[in-house]
Length: 77
Length: 77
Length: 147
Length: 147
Image (cartoon, rainbow over all chains, first blue to last red; front, side):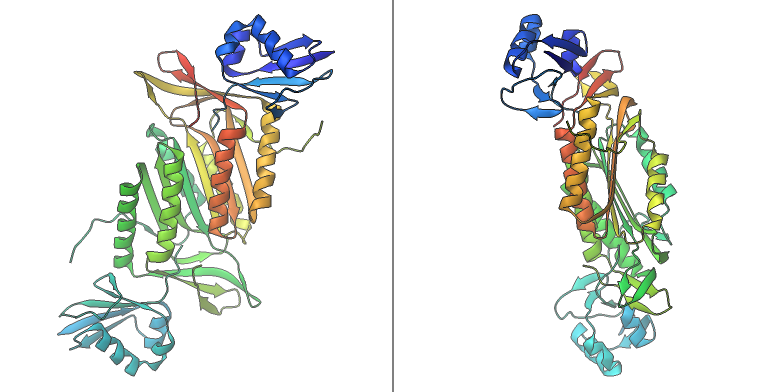
């Protein structure tokens, strides 16, 4: 299975890309752990997670074609 | 002594004029009593009083050249 | 008797949307502004026992109203950290659908602009000696009351 | 996955004062409106440790933001008796002194318009995935944070 990962703001500066693809990640905890392994700077960044455009606050199972987004604190307006 | 009396809104319709002059009225109670004698319909009208552009809630002494205004409920905006 | 310097608040007839847009545009140069809060009062075509309000004709106790607007203005600047404030109120006839009150408050922070604007509008409704005569489409009228 | 019909909220660059005036003017025909409450967010030239903010560059998670704007809109109509509502938010670069957010709420009664507008603005700041990059006059930048 594949999961799309979108990142924004200062997080995109860390990953160097606004969109990544990850294979075989069973849940958001695992996804975040793997991202931190690839991009250790993520550890010190505040963000929330959205799965398919809905904010999730707890570990969430992922399925094929889900979209996970890492969202730094919002600053619109 | 003379006191200027200004009336507005529906009160001006009762008095037929927006501005009156009254002689020898020692205070606002007396002024209102004399107006009601001249225009009995005033009895059934709600209004507040201003002396020299300040709202007064109690009987107020008047002096020469004071301006007393009868103000129906405000409805600006 | 105190004479205070008052800003011109009353305008003849309706406040035009173009004027409002222009007023907003003038604030581009005030670059410490972060938020504008604007209130517009628009004349409604209320149905009063089957008679439609076509317009409101506004009159005021002008000298007292101008002093009151000045006092409301001073109190708002004392109570909130504002950058600027403009108030315009119609006198004379304003047709339904047209704007009769324009309150425009600008501040560095949004909460100050929003709360000052709300307070100013409430005080205008309660404290400023202005009267609206609701003129019916069929030529009768009644005196407006504020809620 | 639900697909909702969303209104166009995002505009490219600043919201122009002329556009705001025109939007207001379009409401003349809605003659049951008694009150408009408008909030405008303007980009400030903040001084950040001696560096002046010259512009903010806005980006968004567009699909999620549009759904959020839609939800905020639906909740406001459910919570207040409103007649209409318009929200515009900038994407891309907006210079200091220019407007990046335009919230426009109209109702029969002023308190509904004012309170709905305030609630909408607070929710936009907190819930909509938009980010502002504050670009300094001397070419550096920092990521904006909302208070």
